[in-house]
Amino acid sequence: MAVCDNVMPVLSLQAVRSLRWTVLLSAAVLGVASAQASHRDTVHEGRGRTDSRVDATKPTPSRPSARQPKAELPVVVNTWASAGFERAADAGFDVLMDRGTSLDAVVAACSFCERERCDGTVGYGGSPDETGETTLDAMVMDGGSMQVGAVGQLRGVRDAIRAARLVMEKTKHTLLVGESASKFATAMGLASSDLTTPVSAAKHAAWIAQQCQPNFWVAGSVEPDPAVSCGPYRPPAAGRNTSIERLPNTDPTWVRPDNHDTIAAVVVGSDGSIVSGTSTNGAGNKLHGRVGDSPIAGAGSYARAPDGGCGGTGDGDVMMRFLPCYQAVESMARGMNPRDAARDAIARITRHYPTFGGAIVVVNSRGEHSGACSTGLGATWSYTYRSGTMERHAIATVGCE
Image 1 (cartoon, rainbow, N blue to C red):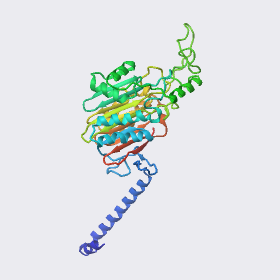
Image 2: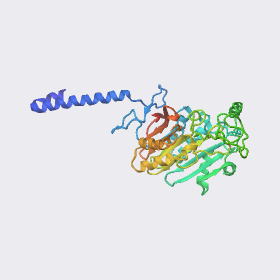
Image 3: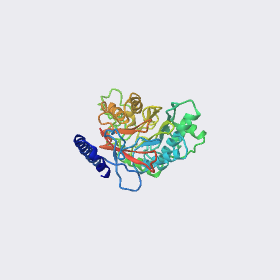
Image 4: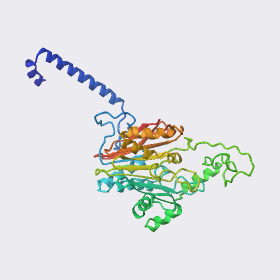
């Protein structure tokens, strides 16, 4: 007030009135901003406090807010937000702090979930197929060189993301599958190990006891009827009139955190490098030999400098038909922000498959990130990130559409 007292005598009456209105208007603006902030979710930075969330579906204000994900580099973003997935983001970020590359960080984040078997849907001992075997899919993509390495239906090797990296760095191929992928991985020095555990064996036994329900066979297309019975299945007898009920494999009851959580990670380094990667043991009770979207570039993840990166999770059989991660990165290249690019990519799927369950995270080269999900996955969905000078991970939650 002392400053104002010194200035007031030399101001005209009109100037005083103008100053008064300016002060009142500023107070009103600050009051509105404060009210809006009180309704906005906050960030959980993993320091033992009560969980809180940031709503990444709301428009980003023109100025950065401490209550929203800040655009900082480097940044590690990965799908899901349960304990294992949260710590995977920290594992990747710690590698960056130790002067590791963005590629090293993606591999570290995915490897963490492979070892910890995040939600039982990444790594060994989870999601047995219809024969009871667990197999793994993984991919890594360097957005600078546009090189990709991937493995599908990897058998007997636990380090799927490292096997994918070896495909990228040691061969001129993009994808190796099945037993041949396993032989390559062990020849390159990775350990051979049984992927079945007592838990996965028990899951398979329980599924058999439930007459192999649910499964991925089309009802009425084979005998015996897969809707009520286990196989082995065969084509219907010649001349038999069968009623085939071709239903989309997007029933939201099967895409759940306990049976289908892929870790997909995107890292944008301080040097502008952009790398993405995935790892999963796929859909539970799938046909033996099935490969999902995770090792498919553009579907499970995608990276392209300087445009950005993306990672996905959900119904891979549907996602690979639309390449949502390629679409999201391409949309950012054409001027969309991460939020709109993510929502647009998911909307392109739900127009054709309204009950589809899936989600993606999208990051641009400045470190801005967002996500989008379909209602087949639930009402909301959360992902994990860590960036800049953050001491630990944080969580962002988006509303599904």
